[in-house]
Image (cartoon, rainbow, N blue to C red; front, side, top):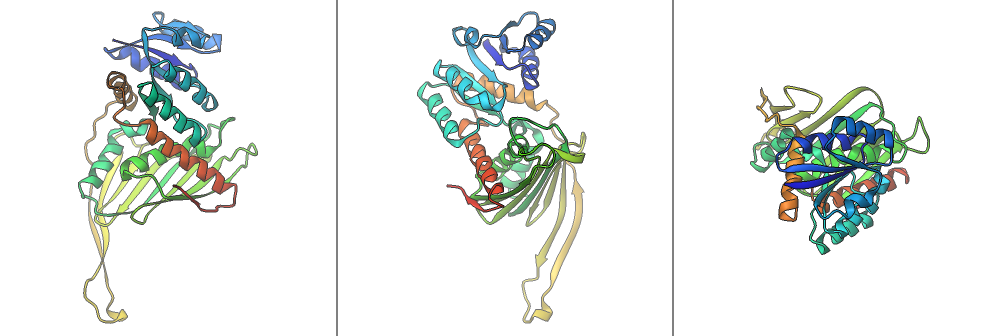
Length: 336
């Protein structure tokens, strides 16, 4: 039985308490927050969980072997590092931290103290994203050409981070996971319309190995909630729509083929293929529960199978570069 402390009881923290309380191999021992009203609410919902404003209560308890950090992003680094130095496994909400240097520091700290470091890139635990990865791995889609992703809604406006740091981690982590490689360059344009200087809309262009192009549109200022990614490949195309409840994945047997034999430009022909649309059946398990189970295994094994610290640092590196590019009028930033 793993004893868990959840740090932060704002939005994500209570969700983790709910999930971890349901799992047979975990017990939430502490809920930590500076806000007494939030703690009072947690006591009403989960009277068996100890509530405290003191981080040290969980830090110094030898029974606690796993910690979930669901606090404001600016606090992630210091809190996660303290628990890793104490030898406790840590699951940090996305993004891992606010700089590549801090992220690399956390990875080294986890390795030095033999403590698992995992990051809450929840979409990596969805059946839909894993289906797209499998389709690409198996060659069912052919060679990937480009990906276009839109993640927009009206709000929620953040005060401590811009829209790139708030929403783009989802799509960047999905792309890195599905394509199994981080991008080699990024350029971005962003604008602040509501609360300068915090950017509330951004357009990112990422280039991946193999001449794969990805375009991301993220916004807090849009009339519609859209969470859609289109994967265009040489054989087939896939639309992943996370807002859909039943048909999150649609596979389109559509494409264009250049006719192999022609002698002049006038004989140049393209063959357009319009085949069937297939909607695969997907597991309907709650992604956060799948993520929590992975974290429990990471505590046991000393390292996560997915959403590792190294993978999270790769995401932070792109976020840093995208913000730099946006503030230099879209100048392309090469990633090492």
